[in-house]
Amino acid sequence: MSTPFKSLIAAAFVLFAVTSCQKDFLDRKPPNKLTFEEFFKTEAHAFEATNAVYEQFRNFDCIALPYIACTDVLSDDADKGSTANDAPLMSDIDNFTVEATNPLVAPIYKGYYRAIARANVAIQNIPNIDMDVDTRNRLIGECKLLRAYSYLLLVQWFGELPIITTTLQDDEYYAKARQPREQVYAQIEADLTDALSVLKEKSAYAPADLGRVTKGSARGLLAKLYMIKKEWAKAEIQCMDIIQSLEYSLLPKYSDNFLPIGENGSESVFELQAVALPTQQAAGPGSSPFNMVQGVRGNPNLGWGFNRPSDNLVTSYENGDPRREATVIYVGEILPDGLTQVQDNVEIINERFNQKAWVPGHPGLQDNGPGNIRVIRYSDILLLAAEAKNELSKAAEALPLLNQVRKRARGTNNFILPDVTVTDQTLLREKIYKERRVELAMEQQRWFDLLRWGRAGSVMQAAGKTNFIIGKHELLPIPQTEIDLTSGRIVQNPMYN
Picture 1 (tube, rainbow, N blue to C red):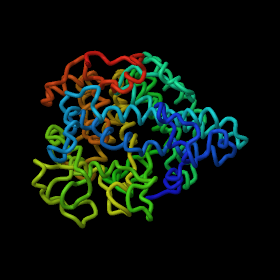
Picture 2 (picture 1 turned 120 degrees about the horizontal axis):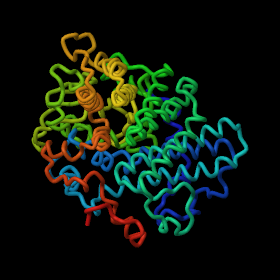
Picture 3 (picture 1 turned 90 degrees about the vertical axis):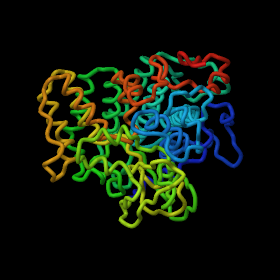
Picture 4 (picture 1 turned 90 degrees about the horizontal axis):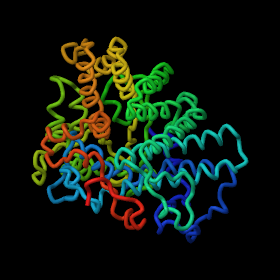
């Protein structure tokens, strides 16, 4: 499924390719490009500036090896994958021997701050454009949501952060210090609340704009923020507003969520767009490397083979759970296109691959990836609502939400995945935690769930990642480059050298 919006963000305005918080990206008048003074004159400019924020999320720094390493691979869902000598420093993240100079940590810090910088430029300048007021406010709301999403990721990875909400001049960046998490949370909440007040519901968007963030997207991110803060009642409200909006529903078949047929479908609450334009032979402005870095390595040659579903994950499913087959590609398996069988790659030990990142044949090469990245699915919201209700001692209300997810997963096979009936809060909590893992496996959710549950250390050590040090490895190290650039004003996280 391809929408015009996918192609529109592929053509995002070139001015924003140089927008960053780093010194070498602060040149305000790059050769052969429009300057700020020449831009932000028309409604078209407002759309281009907003689309440029979306475009950043397909950047290699934001969605390829650094992102995969610091989400799935960091958790017990996945191992590094690929061959032993390919990207060996990714193993340091996998094994919790990572340090501040690791080349896979700096890119996510830089990449998401670039998204914030692009959003800041748009938020600051779009109000000055003479255009339809409702459209102007909506575009600003979209940018605020995307800024909040960036901060939400960064605060979970790094803890205290510099809060930057304006376009910085000269060396202002280097005067910024890290702010407490509570202030970062407050900024995220303010941005999402503002966005919620002006965004449309999903059904109100024209087909050409399918894929833009919505009220549901804002509510979903607010729910995740409140779950981190353990503000259960607020999280419950946001989740139930999504559920009661009737804007979303579970797809009948779980595996369809990760195929082209499921893109921007009824289960999609927040989804990053990508498209492989027909004229592209390599990576183009609409495509993403997300699919390539996780693709089958060998025969067929679909990618680099990183992000191997772990033994721990494979054994975590209940007997017969079809979600395991929809998540893991095994040697000998016929791929979802029904045409190709995966052959053994003798260079990789016990290879497996993430089926949720698989895409069918497309124009161009591997790096011209067309697959959308699912950020929030409706099943995620149902399980968050169940979790919040259970924490509020509403087990009777939590169970139907949890069992909706299990019912869809089992399909017509009533001999598997029976409904959960326990109402004891502690036992039900464990059931919900387990369901979140298998429902959302390999979707870059697990690490953040473990953090907010306070279980990262115990789970990592139980999974054999014995290098995990409680009080240290819940956070990634601040990249050494950031500390050096600010002459130490930005300080390192505890226990890192």
